[in-house]
Length: 373
Ligand code: IPM
Ligand code: MN
Image (cartoon, rainbow, N blue to C red):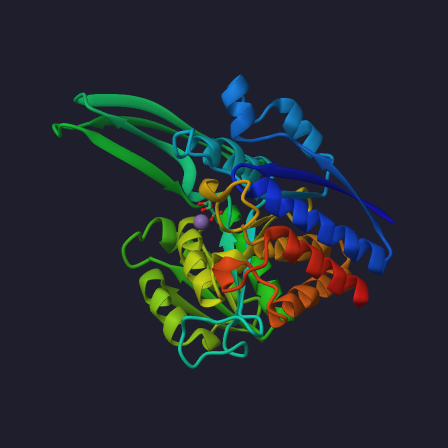
């Protein structure tokens, strides 16, 4: 069996950590009897600075031939914030309609958490972040005149939306941004979360802010309630996003699966990353269950550590385990996670986790642990 995997190292430490990830996945292939063929794509700040191109039609067509993309990180100090993030990472998520952003929050044995008295049995849940809508759709405007007319559009596989807006103001300067939540966009991600909860401990928490942003998240909440009716065996609850940040810290053991709109999902998963031991360990998958999915660490590109060999590749390796799982290599996926856990228990960890291992030492060790079984 051969799997084709697209690789985008990206910026900063991205290429280094993804290189370790590929080595580890190769080791898993050897041990569990499959072959991986990696195809690298030079997408990121360097190409953008040289040519002015973020993503080409060719990139998208080529990438679309793959089931899985292994992604490092994007973001570079030479480029204004937002350009690469929106023009590459978000563009890929949207183009491939990766509507589920799956982010496990799990404390592995031997990792220290800032939460006193909490251990691996207490911190084991999954955040399902909606990944194509909400305030992330990128429509809005900023102006200093008295009035402005704009047409703002969202183009998706699932639907198109067009806003024709006439804004009049006597404020000196004004900016606005529109958040879009649709019934079909909400329903599909909530169903995914219910199905996942059904395969786990049977509890699903919906996180919103329907008490204030009552249009967008009122719809979200309504859809959640409707879908709930089809899953009578599962336990469900609502949390407001402000409150959930408190509960993540106070009682993380309450959570099994958490489903939430895009922006809140972004915010609460950084908090989740900290309680599971830090950004260096937190993986994520951008999933289109019927298309091209993309796996990446949830941390950024940390440009100041580029090329020093000190970056922690563990989040990327864990994301690689999720990638294998997505490809149907479940045993290998588990093997990778187990080997990663062994590396932690044996103290082969980078600086950020209190060790002295270098990026490639961690890759070597995890790969060796996989082969040893
Ligand atoms: C993440 C990141 C991205 C996001 C940025 C880089 C666009 O913070 O994956 O969580 O906000 O989704
Ligand atoms: Mn984020």
